[in-house]
Structures are given as structure tokens and as C-alpha cells.
Amino acid sequence: MKQNCKRIALFTTHLSLNVIQERQAGYISALKKSNSYNDSLIFKIENLKDAEDTIRSILIKSEIDAIFVVDELMAAKTIKIARQLNIEIPENLKVIGCGDGELSREFYPSISSVDFHAENIGKIAVTNLINRIKSKSQIDFKSTVVESSLIQRNSSFASD
Image (cartoon, rainbow, N blue to C red; front, side):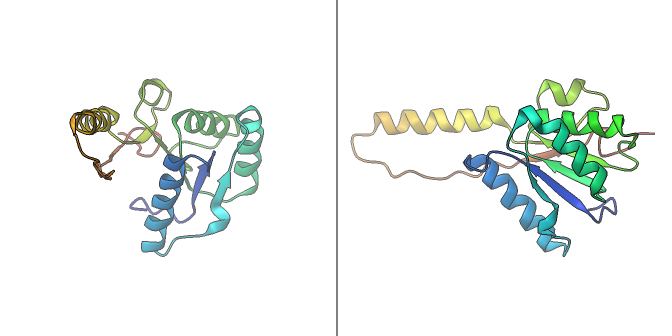
């Protein structure tokens, strides 16, 4: 949004997974706050086997200038297909994925991503589990918010 993107799509999958639902909710919330929300720009790509054909069709038919993708592999597939269609990344299409794995760092162009700090989440989960096991009384489940961060790379930010 800060880079003048007006039509920001969401490529999502497996809405039965809570983590994917949360990512979609975050996308919707952010775009509603900026008055840019358009539910016709949410694309559910359920079948990874056919994902490339689906992504190709969306990129050909839709006027999108940015895409938030709920996972790293689909972000890489999106960039690959955009390049096959001669869509310049990031000049004509910006792509941001989720998860800061090796694929995001090593793919070309490198993939901007939302880092959820999985190591911190793991530490918190283990600490909570140990406390629950050690407790002689019933401990209520609690939610902990772990801040995420955007790692800008070449798929959304043109380096000089």
C-alpha cells in the first residue's frame, strides 16, 4: 500500500487451517483500514497440483499490482509464472509471501515475506507446555501474540 498499489490480491489455500484463516483475516483488516478492500481479489487455490494453471489464469485475467500469498511455495510459483508471462517483478507486480524460509532468500528475485518468528513461537509453546505439565491444577489455555515483521526483498522492492 505504501508503494501505491491499488489492487492487492490474496492468494490463499486450505482455509480449514487456522493459521491460513488468520493470514486472510489480517489481509482483509489491513485493506479495509486503507479503504482498498475488494473481495473479488481473494483467490482460493486449493489444489497445488493445478496451482500453476490457476495462477496463470488469474494473472492473465486480473489487473493486479500486488499479491499477498499465504505460503512461501505459492509465492515462488506466482513469481515464476509472472516472469513466464513477461510481468516484471517488482516493477509491474509486487509479491509478498509468508514465512522466511530458505526458498524466500534463495529464489530469484528474492521473495519479500512476513516473518512469524517461528523459533520464538516454538519457545513460547514449549514453555507453556512445560508449565502445564508441572502444574498440579488445571491451567486455562491462553493465547500469546507474537509480533511478525516484514522482510523486504526484491519481489516487492526494487533495489538500486
